[in-house]
Image 1 (cartoon, rainbow, N blue to C red):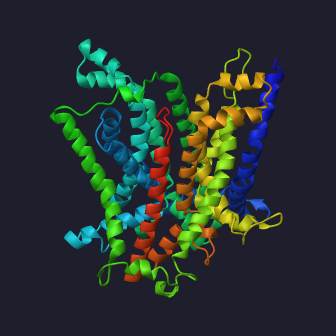
Image 2 (cartoon, one colour):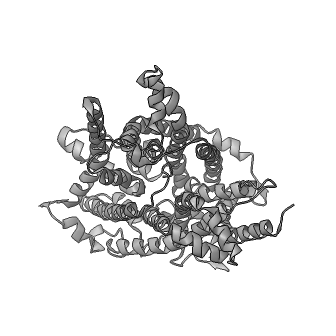
Image 3 (cartoon, rainbow, N blue to C red):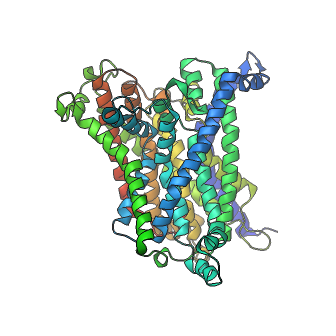
Length: 563
């Protein structure tokens, strides 16, 4: 039988969940359900039989196949290239390690529009390879795969490398003492312990590449289309809401399955490992083999990550009359863009910053309440903490915006939030609301491991002394998680700044965001438009990199393995 303390804990949990659930119901479930409903209804009847018809069309089957194929290829290639880096960051200690760790993480917080633009400057028409050797890889699948590896390299390094650094190396050494070879000891001791982290990283990379939009749209051209790109085309260009609705349902089902498997791998990783202090596992490289591996990883980082960003910066200052600030100066005039904007493109910088700050504030409130609700213990009759189905469902709900079509969310905003009491279609808050949907999962995933590490006895002591649950959280949890809160704010700010899929629909022409402005400039011919796109992308990259470096300094010391 549940006692008063258990009932009070449940009441507090439901109170904390109320605002996040209402937020997701109004600004995620309602717009998505409305746009899908409009696509599947003809008159007063549901046309569910049309789902099989749409999925069976040859052009849609080709989109589905390419979406799956490129996601699998991107995931495999990312693991192949990034796992050596994960090992180096986990086991080696060398000068500049922290700076290098921040560098490899920069691409992950960059908007996909910037990633596509950077690779366009390196591999596309008029890019570095085109100028040097006449080689162009844009509009090819190779450009898409390389950009995906660039974007997701840090996911593997942070997730797998973080856990690897905490595995006790003495276990593998004991196996070698007993006669096992180096590879056999690694395969039988270390690999099984790493498998949940590798699986979790692979699933996240697969999720991000399966729902890829900006990279495929910029680098793939008309020949390649993922589900997300096809939803955008059917919604914004063809105006076929029926096909877009079916594709949204297909993507929703796929993302739900991916997230369910990912949650299982995370629970398995959390419950099956014994970890040690990472400071005791890293050492300076010794021997030719270890130095060669370190050199290979450094070369990979330079070629894969530093080179595209450096070329992006170089192209932004390579004007018609030589190197200078011509393209940056052109950003100050609306006329220079040839009618692309109603305002000077440089205003997109200020617009994006305002939107990102507002979205970050919303994400911190919603994500903070959600994380607090998820960490409240729910006790069974034996007194052991366990998560109920409701809590697991709530946790899954928070992750859905990472995979559900942002295009559908953005278009859903337009058709649902235009009547009282939610008449927000012309309001500036519409953009931060859409951006906050993407920021909330990052806030939750950053806050959860730290909140779960808080000693429950501290909360119990506060309760014994008469503190209410709210005061106990304010006096006990908040001081311990303050730095994690700042890190969460940094991630939310970076991802909000770069959100593109939903914002492209709802950003007003006189208030464009940076990603929308870059996409518009790339969509118009002319050297000046191309150069301005490179300049805006460089500004966006520098702002995101600055936010990342700041949050990396603030990152609390905690168990790695959480990105």
